[in-house]
Length: 298
Image (cartoon, rainbow, N blue to C red; front, side, top):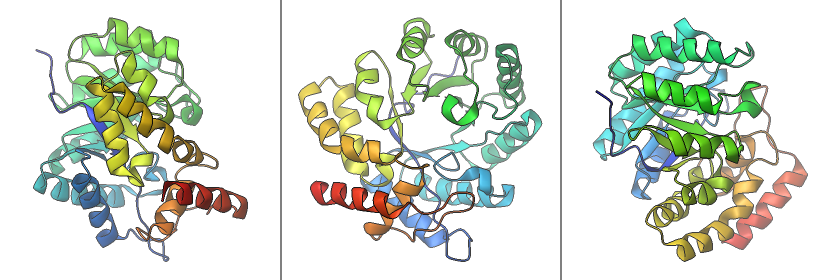
């Protein structure tokens, strides 16, 4: 029996992880950020992904952040899809089991990076995870610009057909032909999410189910409203929001994410602009560009 999840739809936020000046996780700030998301109509929270700088965090830190996210989100009737991916299959299985125990509603599992597996390797990797953590929803995450390897449409569809708990993909390949092939041939239970803010509107127009967003860290209400209006076919309203916030969507990637996003959030008094090496704060020129965009958005 396939897992059909009615809540696997809409705007999700790839949460930033706020750090203190000493590099430790800022617990109170993180909880406030999660609360802010939910109060501004975001019902899917995605901690410990790329935007959360998860690759610089220890397992203990990641589990701590995910636990906080679950506690806040579930208290406010929101869902948590926890980032558990890495390029070590056994480690992903162990991490995914642990976040399930913490009460997460699903796992976001990125394609293995650095190893550059073949498509057969992708099938084996994700298949082993799905079999090892049964009845727990898994969202694939395809982001070739970060991983140096692409999950093909054929591989995604094979995984969706074979494993009942592989229920969605976050597609950040930018390859519309590939994404359309997935949407056209996916099983009914399988959801497709945009992994790029700027491509969300066109992807929903061809059948995608939502967005896992960076921009919604900064402007959750506007981003969520754009997605919801698009999903119900209110295209004029959705386009109006899209073009208003498009400069910020694009500016978040002027430099390596989440550095621009954290600068913007610092300007909004939401967190301290602290990143973990090898990421560093954005340059002076980028700061000026981001301030101009913020001024225009008021």
